[in-house]
Length: 97
Image 1 (cartoon, helix red, strand yellow):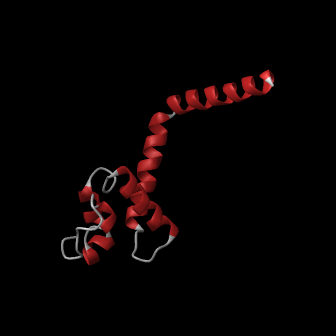
Image 2: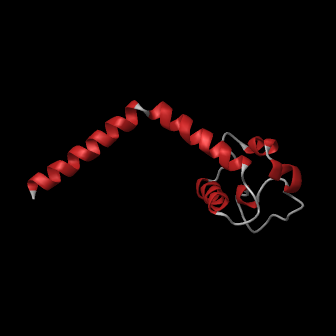
Image 3: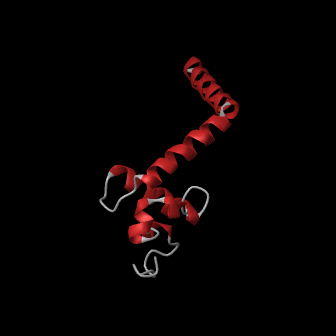
């Protein structure tokens, strides 16, 4: 039992060290993938769009850096900023967005 716990601790320790060492690469990868998700965002509830909505709702954020990231997307030119950017989901109309 102690060997198993030691192995699990060692794996977690190595993962933490790797995360620290490669933190800049992880951040860059995350930002580039989030930018791709913004560009491919659409109204149909596909997995990527729903994941982006969940991230924005959960983290109370909008876009990668801020809401102006949406201005470079096709979705923005057609429909504005998505509803998931709103802090309170119930008090916004489509015209406000």
